[in-house]
Length: 433
Image (cartoon, rainbow, N blue to C red; front, side, top):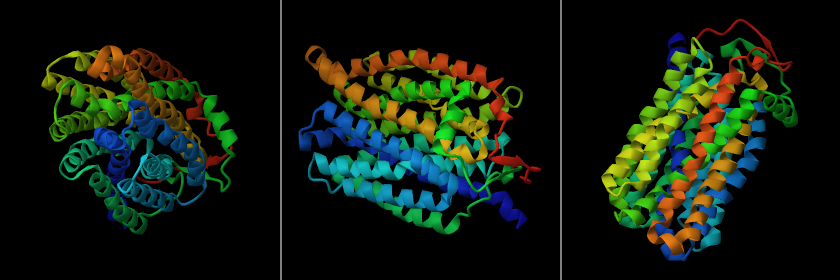
């Protein structure tokens, strides 16, 4: 039993890592297939931005809160496996779409399923790993983002180039159904708060109470705006990067998918893991480093991103944007680790959902749509380079995001929410790790 206790959290973390790969890949695969879908259905960049961004994000954000509420009061293992099954089935159904509306329906099904995954997963991780290891655990979880993008861009690009965009949807949807079954049968639901020496009452507070509680934290308010602005840039670039290279650098889909997917996965993976691990290390002496680190990493990546969209040489652009992914992927693990640390026990999933609500509505909802609409607007003047200048325009928000991350870090140093857990829990001796 003791040996099982030691390895089991890492088995759980490995499954969550694999699921997060599909979570990101199924979300981002549409960006890889945009040019083929545009040609078949005759869509504009604005329509594709709506399909890949706003339509998905509105459903994702609205349902994220009630599903997080469900995660705070019910079995998170069952919720995660059900959500994974739903979005995987919906991804496969996208491959059967015969028009814009049917494809939209499939994408909304993906949004419904994915809405319940992240808050429940964050809460589950927090009950398997203590605060001093939470950054590491979130870093492993966050590695799913660059690996998921790699899978979507590289594998999805090669499948689409060889067999067409419909087969790419099938290839990413079907494995998720099998993984959902494995997760349901092999994962145990842990006792809430035991790892932190806490005991939760059976009645989590109403969602309005959760929203007021986290909004009163200066850390949370600044973090919400900082993360949303950064996500606006990340999702705008993430969805439109492949079309940018196809239009402005004239590479074919399979080649650009292989190079861009591989480089961003390597550099982004290093950044995602290092962000959480380094935050754990620096945070031992000053917890504010959990948020200073994202601020400095975004600041360091900005000039490289500007250069990446301006240089005429394709390989130089690829390398620059890959290095940007190293810096700009370091924010996620420390950010979400802090939310699970400062939020009261029975509010953890819902607090994460409140943050994710704004990140997805502003970032994933408006980022791709804004880039697509701006590209259409300036196309008569810029021609094929309209997308290049639309992407450059989004980078103007990066300095504001940096400032807000620093403000959140400053507030965290004295935020009494870390100690004041409210009346939803009582403190016990911590469970052995």
